[in-house]
Image (cartoon, rainbow, N blue to C red):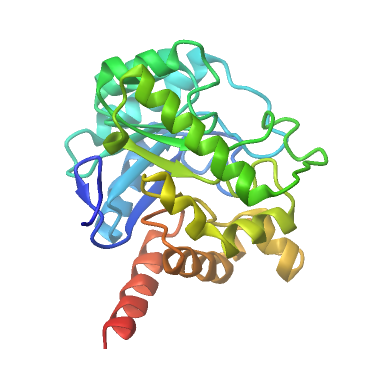
Length: 274
């Protein structure tokens, strides 16, 4: 039976379009800091085929400094309000329970948390009480330090076990498994070798029993393989990673380049069905 997430059937891969309302995100920092521009960008992503919009007001790129909650709210709330009712689920990319509450009140129905609901002591209870869906991501350390010599014995097993434990914690808090997706956290406290191992064995996350979300778009591992390629020049690598991820079981792709990803998925799926 096909799983569902946030009211969307996962009978086909779904695309989560990124709307970064930040001055310092690694690939598009400052591009959509103006709420009017961010709302227009979100509408364009839906027109291009986005099934979900993920709105974030704090950069969690390697080396990023934390953003204050007031600044985060000032960035994301006008955008969520401007996109509410657009016809696709809105996701709030945050690790703060207070931001989660305000964002859901404004129209978000998914919480996407890079700390897997560990970054704020109130976040587990908040998500349970709000009744929304949640994406639990694996991250080793904090964004500011996560790339300082990350080390694992077996990265695939450790990521898988961590996410399984977080799913169990959510269930104990009253968040049913049907509302949870898991994300291995490509580039979050991982070396190039760790990232490639996760790609090669992504199917091992499937037995957690939750849909797998993959966020590989424009990430640094592409430059690690292909030379010093600027983030906005990593489209080809991002598409290759997306298709490899779907082949290994990813059901949701978090991407910057929605139109290109939709085209690649359409062709790849049609060839597979021929």
